[in-house]
Amino acid sequence: MLWKRTTFLFIFFVCVEGVAFSGECGSSPAKKIDLNLWSAPSLRSPDQQWNFVSVGRNSAEQKASLYIQNVNSSKKWNVGWIERNGTAFWSDDSKRLLLRDEYAADDTKIRIFDVTGPAPKELSGLDAKIRRAIFEHIPETDTTLWLYYPQVCFAANDSSTIIVVADAPLVRKRESSSGRPFGLRLTVDVNSLRIVDSRPVASLRQPSGQESLNAGTAPVGWHKVDAGPFSILAPPGWEFHQLTGVDSYVGEFVGDSLTLRFDFGRYSSSLKEARKPAYVITKESIGGFRAKVASPRGPGHGITGVYFRDVGRSNALCLFGQDLTSTQQELALKIFKTIRFGGTLPRFVIPPPPLSTKNQ
Image (cartoon, rainbow, N blue to C red):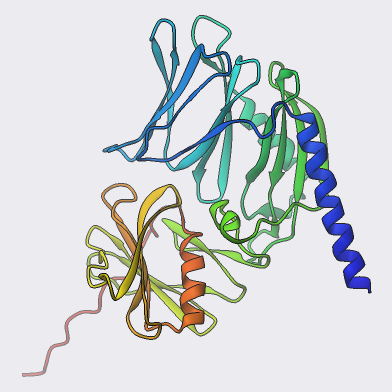
């Protein structure tokens, strides 16, 4: 049948692309660490001479400081920070460290540090060069829903070259849709900041399940719904509505006969009413921040919600649905995992209505 043949060709193409990519890289997969705002992971270079450390635990500024340390002298250098999450790994020859910084809800930055000199040095201008190369392939009438790098590596036996695959779904400017797939594969000389090769990737592998949600993407067809300081990914047809708030920013996401309301501010509900054993309570990392996720064991009764105690500037977020069916609960939990932060509050927040007065 035609659909079977099409599916086979798609899977074959994806497998060939994956094999080709891994064949051009160094050790694949490279040993890497995941970075966030509260843990303190570290990663030694293959030659054991350098140590990369991220210190985010108990960060008062909602940032994780990054350090590269010389193991022999114990001297360390601060090389910046991350504000959400990311990943880092060394080149096979221990000359360079690559950092993939997921600093915004829909944007990613690539940074590389060279440790061949007396002190670690960042290769400045690299990310801007890659970004310009990507947007040269995008029509002026379009923009991207997000810019994500699902595959990045140092070339085999050459740490001065990196291979980058960019995932940047396209949408017409000033329009809202789930976007059209667009991928680009770039080979970059990091010494000269020269794009050695760039070619469109006909289809990117669509992650599935938990991997998809953790990557900041979602099932095929889902689109970004922006609320300002944060956004979600949701099925087609979902909309955002701002509501009246008293001392915080309030709104709702609506779609598929389901309403998820939120309260963003210093006094957001912490879901204290959701307690074991009536509720399933988990602590997770979502969008680079710690989150409490609660769902009733008996669908149809209670709150299904997610709570972030602090997402910056002492603001908390509670997003929840009330008395959801099992199907609605499953959808809500998937949407929660796509929450990403990085925007700003609306310029004007709807004030509460004035108190009514009775005629004397």
